[in-house]
Image 1: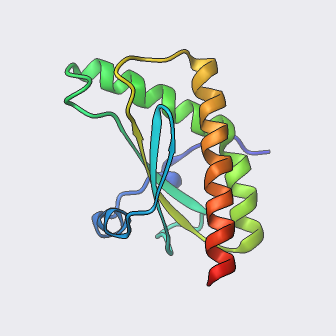
Image 2 (image 1 turned 180 degrees about the vertical axis):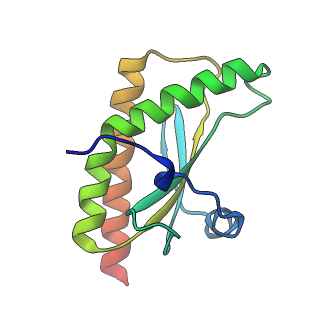
Length: 132
């Protein structure tokens, strides 16, 4: 039960990030908006992701960094839900996670929201894989 979220999970490819937004597949679970694309990622991990906190909402860098740090921790705690699903089906996904709330939420709430977000993503991916 590996709960680390190391460098292998970080999505750095500008080409893949652009493809995520061109594809326009979105999952929303307040306070998150998750853009995703089924693709092959440069790592052997089942998914890679980017965390974002908008500068127009969080003007100060330390606020954006704190939000991203909290979000990264909640994903680290809940990643096994998504990772097991993707490994079973032998697919890879690129994710772009945006925090959209105007203020910071409690860690426990974010933990539950992240779990719900991953459950929604799994449902959508299942439907998408059935149609293909």
